[in-house]
Image (cartoon, rainbow over all chains, first blue to last red; front, side, top):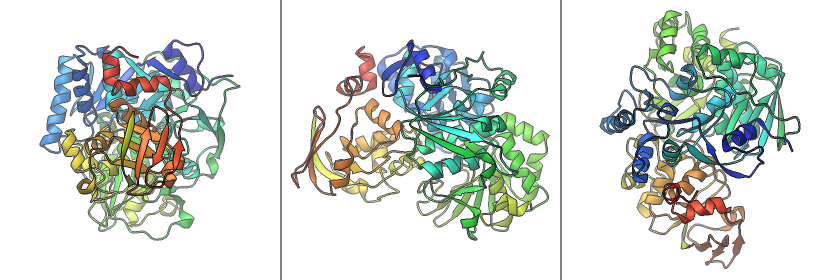
Length: 421
Length: 163
């Protein structure tokens, strides 16, 4: 029996010639990632283990992104703990205020992940790097501690669902609409414990930014990882970001898939996930006039330059609707600079939006855009669980940057097709 | 390993944001996390949960964020065991890694009611409902995971050179 792309990467990192679904193994990791929320728990476990040194100071990445610049004293203490640990351990890739970005936008941008890598991160959206042909998955703090100490992690080899993409996206439709569509079809546990492997001619029609967005939300279908076949676009991206030499793994022709889902990209419409699960998706034929109080454009899902361009195209020359608070968050310092150079930030501010320093803040209800009781937000983020962005009786509607921007200018959840027709 | 206790029930897709809301993630203090466990789903939970209670839930328990604060908050609330129809994968490994016992058993998760007294025998994969007399069989964990569990979690297993 052949292997999937994911299985091949796991086998290679476990020193095995082949593996099969369900097998438990211990694998070498190429990168161990943590943030200011999950790392403190891992550092305590690392210390409790009695480990003296991290296994490889170049393979640990710690990014202060959730509650920075420090939102309160406790958050400041957590960052201080990470800073001290990385200083003592001489961790090469420690990203603090001024250098940091939202981790899953930052690592690809900084060339810290390449095709064929095995990456674990104490953050569920670590699955993002599957867009670059890596096996990359979210774990907990104890796994992070073990990974930092030993360079290894345990895995159950996943079975897989193949997602075959055809065609290309229409104007104002993006990777976000594709992944929301898919989650709507298979459900929030539709890919539980499994890989989502994206293949087909349609892959080439998706930008790397769209692929990163799609892989990012694989976890929202319960998947262990989402992974894209490597093509010329991937290789060009890796080269231009200074990533290490890629190792290309392709699924065997006789690899086993539990299920195949076909998606015609040309049929995807602007899609919105209603509260309180990402699977509650609707297209605009089924969405009435729903007023919003806040719009958030940013996050590890949709805070890249392409996302800001899509939003700015719609907001240029328009004004944010009265009573709507619009928060734009470039995901990294580089994206911030690029957006400034392109004039995007000017467009946002002139339209009545605010532009924030990179932070995960509002996405997880940390700070920088918390909702009051009964308030409603359209967000380009990834989760709309109860209380995710603030009060347990507030609501989050997940959408693309174009849909969020269209909603910002009308004050209602609005299709970009309607504003730009 | 055997656990006996009274059941507290929850439904499907209980996510880590309701198990421990992000506004409390500025600490990893166990007692502090326990105070806010399940707060956005059931504000009475922290007040009524008792040492030894067993949590029973539906599908996809623990979906969402990778925060280990979620199984820690449950464990620190005095709960030694969670039974569910299925677990989200990061929660599943986090629970095993920190030594919080979990069992996937759809039949028991469907049938057991709030307040029932149950007994779970992890070694043999048997759950008994002491209130109704019903018995359920599940798959025991594979040896690799049993090794982690028997050492009380991943760190101790690594420390003992067991992996």
